[in-house]
Length: 221
Image (cartoon, rainbow, N blue to C red):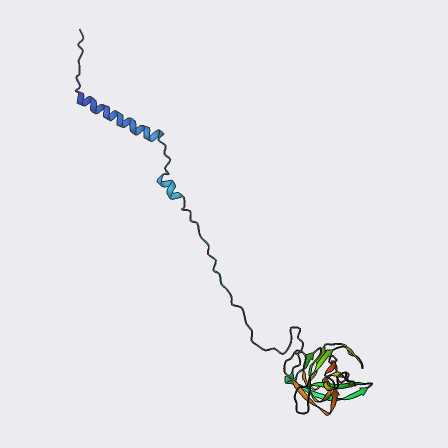
């Protein structure tokens, strides 16, 4: 005859056992199948932080260079232009023919360096006391006495360049004609004036042709 032993378990014990089973199941599931979108601490440490560097280039403005030095040559290494500071004006003489008069003048380089010139001098007839007379110049390479080309000239120290004036001895208006006893000249590329006398005077009627400068005294002789 077999007897069956009945074990009675209190409800509190059963409830405790159920809690343990649920806790164990929960721990096991978390270890085997849990996934997360948040990076782990290890992966976060292994990836270096990304830094966006902003490059700033220093901007430096170099001031313009201003040169105040005075040079004695041009950009092509040519001597400077002839100016009144290094020139003297000389009267070469006068000739007359068929109602036309020719007056010759020269500019002499009195400086210690060569200088250059080209073109026509400015002119002004002067009276006996040095006052200005009415003067109407006409620049030309061809006048009553021939032709003179417009040429670039280099004038050595002590050398000269010359030009001539053509004047009329036949007056269309007698009141406009007079005798000039001097001439005032401005060299090409200059503003300063030079003067020379005309011994015995030169008869002129306001208008005058002016030749370009020529080497030596060739404009007159």
